[in-house]
Length: 154
Image (cartoon, rainbow, N blue to C red; front, side):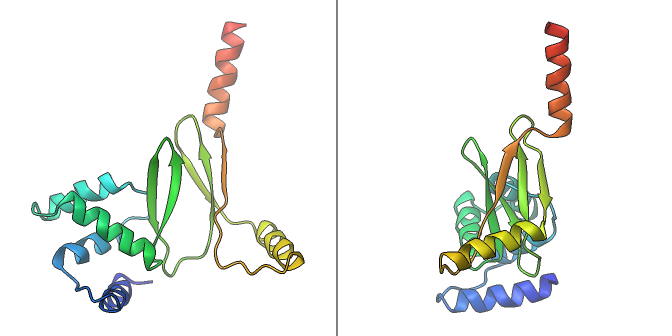
């Protein structure tokens, strides 16, 4: 989805909640749409402050909450109390693998996993409206470093 389309949808979303589109909210949405990386609220705060020094931390956190509520952004718990955001409106669903050593995030889509989830839901007469799959472990680089350290110690 193009940024202009996301902006229009966000304006409509805000009006439905009797809120208005401020320049700060617009900037936050545009910044979120300008990256394909996962980011923290503090990352967003720093980016927004670079554009407009008057942006408050509270405005960033409230706007991110609105963007999540409106399904413009999704959250990913990286562990250790850190929440990451990514823009999802107009993007295909995907899942995540998170390295517990270095924090690397690998996005993936597996049609077989999606099919199995639908099959299990149907078996239990359950309607899935959304889901999150997060696999935790070690990436290839961290696994190799661990093995090297073990060999050196042993």
